[in-house]
Image 1: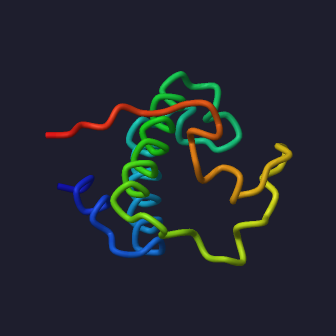
Image 2: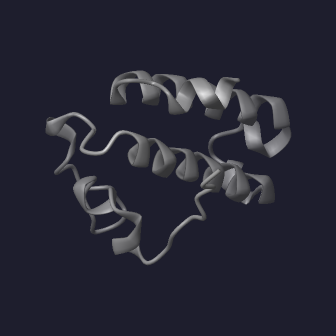
Length: 103
């Protein structure tokens, strides 16, 4: 039900708010290093959790074609990477994809 609500969010703002709440809740629920920002990336669960968050973003994009983050954020650089928000919106341009359930 929670994931359905996230994917049905009508705007990027609603989507990101709902997704961020679930994202943070999982970090707290797992606990240990996952609940500490400076070391969360050292927990193996971190990577599968963030892959799921990324997949939900992809599925929301499919359901809301043309919906974008706020215009003022699109050309912000994503340090330490030499890419902007705009350059990361299309995962196929990044060289990967997710399976999409069609039923």
